[in-house]
Image 1 (cartoon, rainbow, N blue to C red):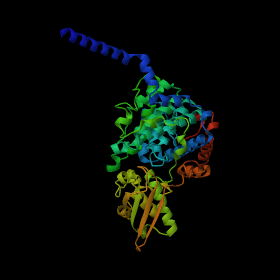
Image 2 (image 1 turned 45 degrees about the vertical axis):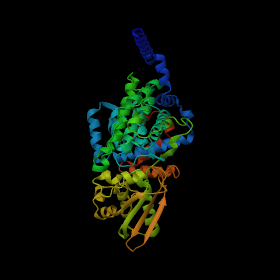
Image 3 (image 1 turned 30 degrees about the horizontal axis):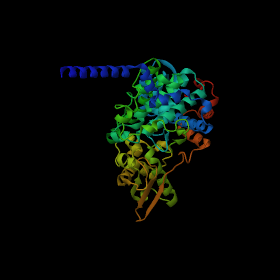
Image 4 (image 1 turned 120 degrees about the horizontal axis):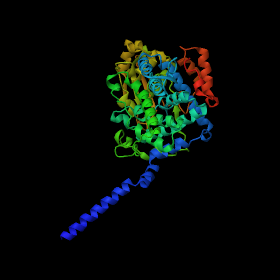
Length: 481
């Protein structure tokens, strides 16, 4: 019996020893890392060539860039953004990266922070449709511009990095299946770091292995709590700046040899299992290189949350079709997707952030003001007694025909003081992939958002960005306006 027990202990020791050799065998580890989603994504991003990108994808990427610059120039004038810009100025060494819409130049990571915050400063930055909880403006265009200026990259190099980052960012957001914000985290702040890590790695010519490490590092940079939607504060605007700054740091540390977990996405304590619920890892690499998600870019029409874009459009349509105004409306009924019902049915917002996040308040604004002018989303509007009273009447309910958590279809019903009711249902607005802005319409929007700067300089910058593939050195563009 003693001899048998000795042999069994010896077998266990041999087995443990063999297991340790397997676990530490560099060849086995390398093989495993080569097949992780992080490595597959990094291989795609590192190898993508400008010539591989379909022309229509390049054009849509340029639309996103133009829209981003306009949002940043507008956002740079806002008091909460000026606080972030001041921080960047005080703490950055002299640099070549512009704080867009200002004469300030800082080092690239501080430009990522400041411009990321200004892009999202007033709910004007681009999205995608169908939504997957990402903001390509701050996560991709902002760091792409910062690094391209700092390193004197060409327009083609810049656009290639943005497209590569977009394809990764969309898939990572899609794999989360709209669960991040249900847990209590702000999705663009959590996911954005990966897109930035890809863009910056690409522009610093980081190889695929180190780029995969950049994703591993970026996983520890994800942040952003949803509490702003309940008790207010400016911090929502900062989330995207911090994501861009964190993604930049992850890329540079990885370039210099720093490492992160290989299974940052799918591991037991990775992104999809910590920040998400019921995630789908297969979406991380689905149709990579054949389906171009850049084409899903959605440009906002109004300075409010994406969930309010269709309801506000419907309210304007009803207003015009029936010749009614806010004073004619007794109460509002809004039927929409689950996200609108659970997170954006804010009838009594406390501050500007909550006002722009509120679907009822945005619809009420549309009935009293012209929401196509971003300047109507103001403190004066927030404190307007008539608009506040009408917003409080709004009832937000699930729309039975809305397929999915973020389905764009919505219905707005206005119950009028004369006893009649008018209703409209829709799923689109000018700026979505199915109703994209023409380049002339985008130019009009760009000049409206940059109207406080020099008109001639703004027109010249628009023209240069519209032909960004012809720019030999992004540092030569005038972003100060």
